[in-house]
Image: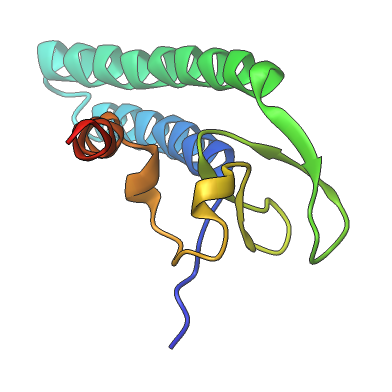
Length: 126
């Protein structure tokens, strides 16, 4: 069974969209308990905070997206954005890397972590 990779930008956008739906759901719970005014207000404020946080996440990923490297995917030949050392194509989910040391190596998202890069530096210094 092949692993299904996902692009980091799409993952974050999906998270932000889910925050909007969660916010609406929490506000709907507030409508269901409208007999208890203070509880309704709490649900409405929590829902609003979810939607505001979603807006912040969308703004942040927009800023990240403008700094991402745009490349042409070798599989589907469509333009895609690459965040970090390894990422997946936005369209065909093909694992991609710009790091020559990782070409031909099994795809793993741990290559983007700071801990992994720190381990590599320690290993190279020995």
